[in-house]
Length: 102
Image (cartoon, rainbow, N blue to C red; front, side):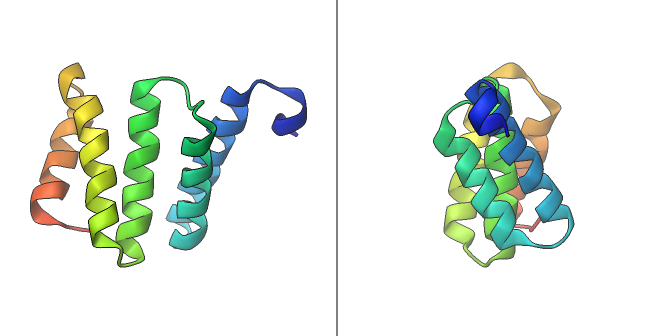
């Protein structure tokens, strides 16, 4: 629906929210697919929102055993969030250092 009638921002945001839902439902392949679609659209609502999509993608990839790609996504998200002083930056830093799944 958004693809046909709304700005691309809403389409990207919808893919991101679907990715989060799939990740919560323990469906990491579908989560990764939707997160990648959100990033491909390039319209997720700014850099902080892009970092959130990257974090979700990193978690999905981690669950799929794609640890290097997961770490790269998390590192990209951290590079966006760290300068903002976001509390999520500390969480990401801990995940990157420990390689713990989340």
